[in-house]
Image 1 (cartoon, rainbow, N blue to C red):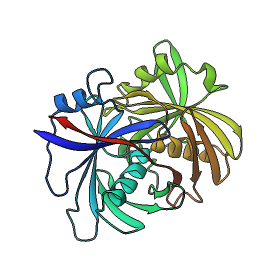
Image 2 (tube, helix red, strand yellow):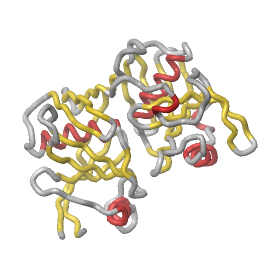
Image 3 (cartoon, rainbow, N blue to C red):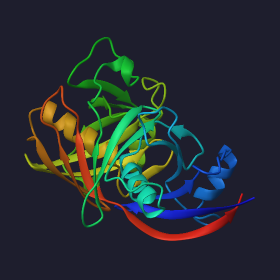
Image 4 (cartoon, rainbow, N blue to C red):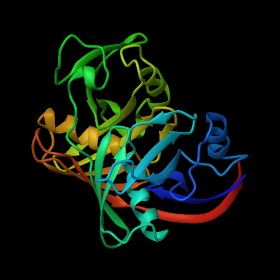
Length: 276
């Protein structure tokens, strides 16, 4: 079976996108791993499926699969690429899209210069909602990782995130601590791990070890999570520039009851077909 695909990226966080609106597509974990393989497949951090809306008030369904074949709830960089994809494929002429994900409904706004603004929803801080094993909700948690005790913030942006503040992302122990925290038993569904360096109240640097994919060049939900934690720690203002290895995102969060807004680029790289 041959299927057309589009390769896209948001700040280097790259995706293979399939149009499953007219012709539904079911992918096995093995197929996703082959597609994602950078030596024998197309190569990507995640595979995205664009499906018809399943309820009247949404325009599309949006499904996300990590490079290891596992399906996840949300992906901010993928959401921006999703918005540009459906416009370029002629699936919609709307500038505002209502999209159903596994974690709920999100709204996407296509802007000028390849920028897409995303309403990422209100962050979830209750441990059971992440999920994360803790006696009660707190601004900061102590967690044992190997022989170290680390202090983290924990939040869900539709998917679970642990955030650590570090002196410098250039020397962050991403390869060592990332996998240990990702699969820590206190996160029963695993977790994305953000390493945040605060430059000032309006700017941070960030590296993210993503659940099921490893370190990526950018992570939209990770940028939102870091901003939320930094703001809860009273170290950041309501508008923050997030510098990731792949580029820059603008994140805004006005109040604990308000949604987080993310703005950044979405780029089409090439199109092709693959035998599945």
